[in-house]
Amino acid sequence: MKMYIACGTLALALIAGCATETERNEAKTAPKTPTTFSDLPVAVQKTIDKRKADAKIGDIEKETLSGRTVYEITLVEAGKNRTLRVEEDGTVIKTEDWIQEKSGAERVNVY
Image (cartoon, rainbow, N blue to C red; front, side, top):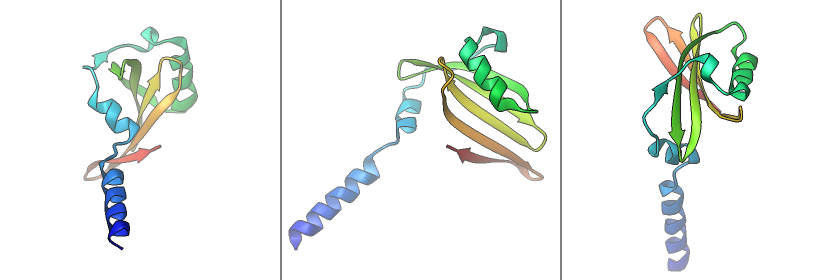
C-alpha cells in the first residue's frame, strides 16, 4: 500500500513540475525586435494574409525562441485583437485572441 502511495505522489509531482513546450521556449526568449511586413519571409507573409481576414496588421516583432526565429504579429479588428506567433516557414505555433470589452481587453488563448 505504501508503494502505491509513493508512486502516486511521485507521478503527481512529475506532472505538476513539467512545463509545456511553449513555457520552456518563452523562458529562453531573446529581446523582441520591431520589423515590417515587407521584411518578413514570404512564407510568413502568406500565413498572415490567409489568417487576417478583415483585420489590420498592427505590431510585428521578430524574436528568437530556443534558437528559432519567430515572428509575433498583432492583427487588429473592431472589438478583437489577435496575436500570432509564426515560424520562418509559415507555421503558426501560437494564437492569442484579445476580446475588447467596455472595461478593457480580456486575453483569451486559442491553441
